[in-house]
Length: 184
Image (tube, rainbow, N blue to C red; front, side, top):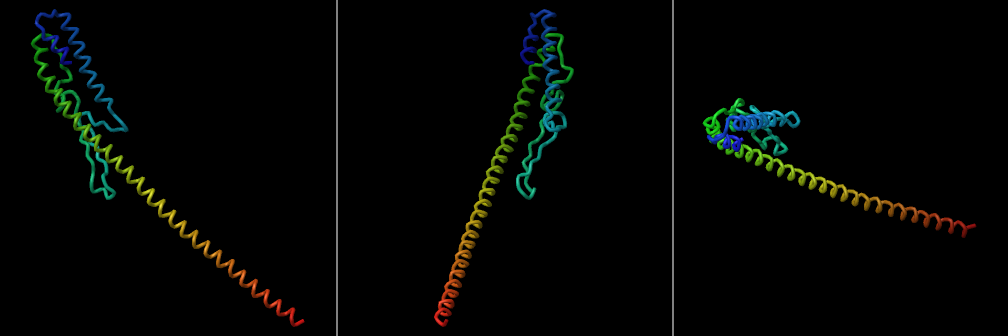
């Protein structure tokens, strides 16, 4: 848009060329509206006027949150101050948009930086939660494995005692039957 306005600001340009540049300028302007309007994901749009600020839980108690503030990138908003009806018919009008577009570029870069920082914070927290979940799963698995090993050792000890008891009874029964054969 800035390139179109800069080219149209040339006073030696004829009306037909300036009109063509204005049509390109308006097409790009309208594309901003379409992109902002269609930037919905899962029912949330963080870049439209009165966009949705995202709050994500940062701890298990819900007392801490990661907040990613919505950024208004709509035409006529706080970051893109260019009006939804912006166009030019003269070199002077095109020239007037150049400074506005420079300011808007700076504002949009700042807004995108804020969204990017929030995105990085959410990605880092997601990675942390994933690692924490893996650690908990591994810890629980180790506890279950330790309990299983302990129970297996107890079972083996009880089976050994049972076998020794059966063997002792067999010896005791064998002794009495030997004694009985002697008294016959």
